Length: 397
Image (tube, rainbow, N blue to C red):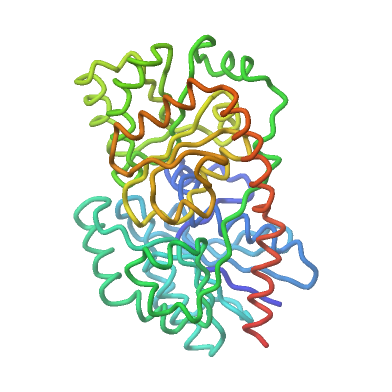
């Protein structure tokens, strides 16, 4: 079976000295890019499966990259908008190879519309993975206009034409502004994780030493892009109450984003800046160390375009108890009181109470850690690939 994956960004598999660091970083923080990457790698290992990826290049040149049973067709970038590498070629030029089935990893006009045009032209099935409602509030002015235009005029065309829509979370179908009318062709397949990537032989103390983190403090960890929808400001506002009741606590914020300066100013205003460390962008090789060094992970997301945060799988694979907001979609991973605690979204007092409770109850943390490790085994990429393969086979009849 020949599969064509459309995705706006895709990590470079082989080492390339001319790949821009900015493109590489965007790929590492792009959920759709990472999911498409791991699914492609896993799918290509299966007998009689050939994967072709259609994506953008980090420069203005077209290129073809081969890795085992994967061929990556990169279209040269014409310009960039808000971190998106825009190539106009896929809209006007036929793809260089024929496939049996298409799988678009949205949401982006740069991948979804070319996939739709290809499917219509060649009369082949289209699978669409829905990675969340368009975030029309993110990015600069031009980016916002482009996202709003896509959401208003094109998204329903893609969803209508798709033979099957894959949604990572059952709970998100109801929260989405767009998915409700397509429920009859939605199949729920969660995102996956390579469990071995978050297994480290280092102890918690050794991880803290390597990362230059305090050995004698409780560490609360946040991992994610610093945007409004992730709610990092709610977590910073929760810190005064946390420090008042558990003084030896420090918040480690891993990630980059436009909110960083705002968060730094907020921490100073609240007089908690000495209890917060901004680690910035962290290489994948160090992520497992940060998770192992921490005592709790908190993800206080506030907006409903959060679908299935990979960070919760990563924390689970590291045995971390979690404190999250009450978005329905997060129930796909978090069971309140089992592997984490659910707090009211946007409520820093309720969030601080949940974190304080876990910090003051080590036995509860240990039990939640065991529960998290047990639950995450259901999300291996091998299992996710099997479920996706079944979708392909059913669509092709």
